[in-house]
Length: 281
Image (cartoon, rainbow, N blue to C red; front, side, top):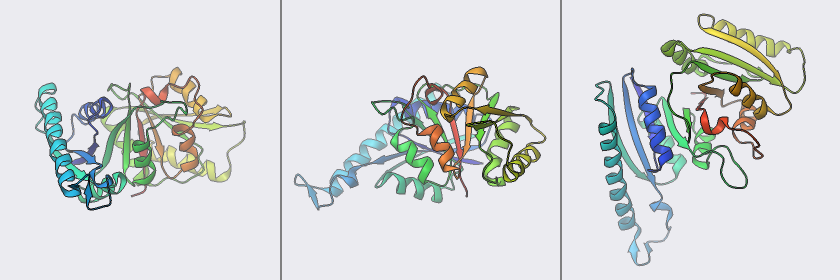
């Protein structure tokens, strides 16, 4: 049984993530938790707001969000055929976004957080929206981030960018193995460096570990030379049928260049390809 958390702000992006998750986990037993977090508690730290108590304001926000959550459940039942393997639950809460996410991850024993993001917008062209960015950097739970233009298709190829600098644990790699097993997908391990250099002893050891762990799956190892990681990833995605990009969160400096680079030119993977980010448990 998988426990999947679906944070939603009732936007088209969050609905797109819900649709993707239902397709992605179609053949698995799942409990889906649709969570909306209201900001009512952040409206004021004083006893009242314009003469109305914060408790009353919070209750109103929660009541409204519960109605919208019911509407989302109705949309799900109308759009998808009944699946006895799937059960849906709604959660309406108030408080700090990240602290609330962390609490529900712990209480519901969440395996994966699936959430949408609008991708590059505004002058800074940040790849990942602030809420999604906070989740993947501050919540120790596997996160599947669904960009605005990503539509579910069979997962044929998974790109795994790495610099081989950090060792991998089973907890990191198991979510990838599960996808490879379920969809009979191919894993493409992509090492990107600024110049052609032989791997260090540590890098070679970590590469060997990946080869050994994924020995029973279809896989290949690729070496790309480019001073800009995000450009190398874009070229790789464009040249192949890449359906998902996966990364290890503890390799913070590396994956931040892929997800949070602020000067984006001709980069589209962040609006089209889902990201699977794995954490230490």
